[in-house]
Image 1 (tube, helix red, strand yellow):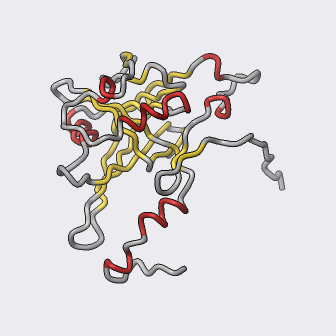
Image 2: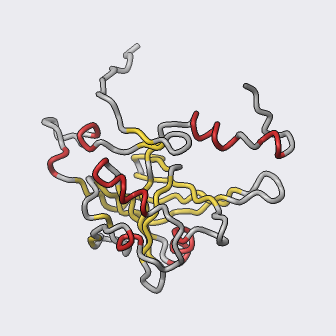
Length: 208
């Protein structure tokens, strides 16, 4: 298969399904935010990852929705530039999916999905109480990604600096390292497919 991304739009129609299936698996950025008026939002983003550990930075991408100018998460971050990344594991997967529903601005997704919220230590948005790990962040930059062709929706990349980390004590191994396999993070694939990680293995870096 060959796809020319500079060709007219009809030839580019398969891009999103193909791109999402190839760039996989992807961690899910379950992001909680709050508006200036105190309305809490919780939403999953399939384009999410770490950028750096020194300084500790995260990023996620907000695509423009069909029913409004920008996602509630992005609107909240313009008002209160703080967010929490909540790690999604199998016990939270159904609730995570519920928070992806298109709801009116101001509706609390925590309440909609039956999730307990707990106050963060530094930032204003709450975190998911049952998440195996969470990272409190302050927004460093919002990068605009302009549409490639007329009529296409825009996208924005949010970059945040991690200011606090929460992790369940039972998820650390004998060496004191966070056990990702035990946490069983849910990963995003193409289409409506999800996955968790298989048994991990170690591979030493060559010295020469």
